[in-house]
Image (cartoon, rainbow, N blue to C red; front, side, top):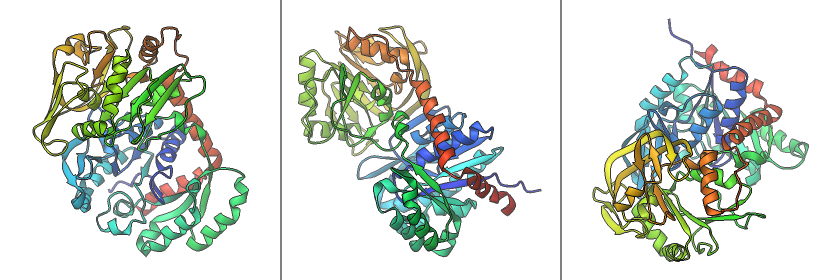
Amino acid sequence: MARSPAPAIMILGTGSNVGKSLIVAGLCRLFANRGLKVRPFKPQNMSNNAAATGAGEIGRAQALQARAARIAPHPDMNPVLLKPEGEQGSQIILQGRVAGRLSSRDFGRRGDFMPQVLDSFARLSDGADLVIVEGAGSPAETNLRARDIANLGFARAADVPAVLIGDIDRGGVIASLIGTHAVLDAEDRAMIRAFAINRFRGAVELFAPGVATIERATSWPSLGIVPWFADAARLPAEDGLDISSGRKPGARIRIAVPVLPGIANFDDLDPLKLEADVDLAMTGPGQPLPGDADLIILPGSKTTLRDLAALRREGWDIDILAHRRRGGRVLGLCGGYQMLGRVVRDPLGLEGPPGEAPGLGLLDVETTLDADKTVREVDFVDAASATDGRAYEIHLGRTEGLDTARAPFWVEGRAEGAASADGRVVGSYLHGIFASDAVRSAWLAAVDKERGASALLYEDAVEATLDALAAHLDRHFDTETLLKLARTRISAG
């Protein structure tokens, strides 16, 4: 006897960055809190912000959603992850593992991965009470529809009903919802069963005529108007990077971060951003690194040689070397660690055209990229403070040299990273070190000797924010109708 399909619902958006990831995370926590076995799923993601699982890597957003659902992340939650490598294309992560490169010209080949997407979805659905699927971009991109695996192409193939989200904060939400309805063909349009408005500011009742207009034009019912959730900034960064201006009032410590084109795994910075006395100066193109920074962090990069060239074009190499001469501290993470050495080599062209370039020369190490990719979660100890935590590695390459003898970290009995003789320049392949309250507090105390222990309990703050987000959606989103729509798959199956 055929098994009934698991209840499932797909959250689509009228465009990118309308809040789909956050809504899925909130719904995962809401239904998990009700005792349901919830699973997040995103057929295809495009992001360099990745997370390591025990079986490979997935998009950071799906790792957060898994946490919201109170389960361990798994590659089946994001079977296709495309990691951009500049204009030439993207690295393909298929069911957690590297599976080649997709050129921008061959973007339509994504359709080739539909069997793996459906295979992962079937495994993930087995035993689940509810699967919440996140779309990518917009289903209104009809030029990509023929080989679509990320939106209604998947919904049709897996017979999953969908809800369309519009972001009123961006403006034009009525037109974006009605316009999406207008450009879809009848079969695709029938997969969307309702809509909702996200990020509303002000008196909700003022938009009642707008809701009525959308309902008349589309025949879709509204599942609610979700007000702006200010605490979203307290959750780990997903696919977008906020470059804010202005100095944080009352900050004692200033940390400068150059935002390079291929920046990756920038959620490393999230715990620092939440510290009340830390000003995180995300510095974009055309701006010098602040001369009064206490610490410069070079974050991860998907294209180290390309980003190293960009760093020099911006003149940031001069800023970093001047900062170092003034006695400032520098931390390089993953690709940023590689840039701090004497040379970076990519003989196989793993991140772009084959080549090599001199690094900043602040660490006596050299890096050679090779085809073996390290993806793993690890326990580590900070050598200077003897504090510990949990971190992860996602990188290509081997880094060797004299400064590795002064390893800043120990990972399961082995030395990891490198440091200068005075300890003020440090490089490491570890991501997520600052999520450990003890490690973060020790590092900030080293920068500011008069600073006391950190009052921020980062992991507790994330958990509390996920619960608050679930309660927020419970108040403003028609979750009962959403659940009934998800369960229509049972009767249909």
